[in-house]
Amino acid sequence: MNIGEAAKFSGLSAKMIRYYEQIGLIPKATRSEAGYRNYSSPDVHSLRFIRRARDLGFSVEQISELLLLWRDRDRASADVKAMALAHAAGLKAKVAELQAMTQTLEHLADHCHGDDRPDCPILADLAEPTAAESRSQGPHRTRRFGVDTPASSRSRRVKMTRS
Image (cartoon, rainbow, N blue to C red; front, side):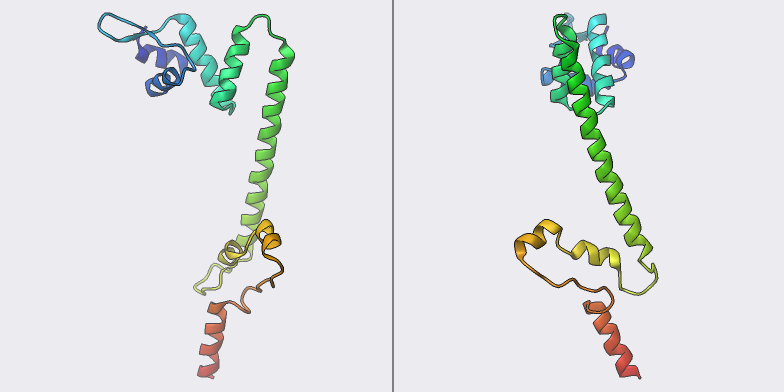
């Protein structure tokens, strides 16, 4: 079958199939007399395997290892299980990071007035050094939003001159 058909049956784009061939994830396709790529049923089966592994978030390197394990009938299933569990642990860590980012953003948004004033706790937080940066730079005082920012000082001066 040609690359378009292989793409249809595998769920990958023709561009991705060519890329996987280029990086050696799959062997080079045989060519017709006209130079078109030809794929067999086992080739398409491998492409579906790759698509499924990619859908589960495995990296190209991990997929390469999984393909080797899949093709090796003498392999121990413990090797595959260890790889899957390590990947699952990495995904859980990523989920925890994303949840922490979501909570931080929601917290900052809850404390933002969202009006026409320039004071913005979201921007103030983004301007603060991270914990690692703070440790490496030594002690610093934490800015209190709305009290010692340039925008709040400017608005206090304007209010004082108007009074």
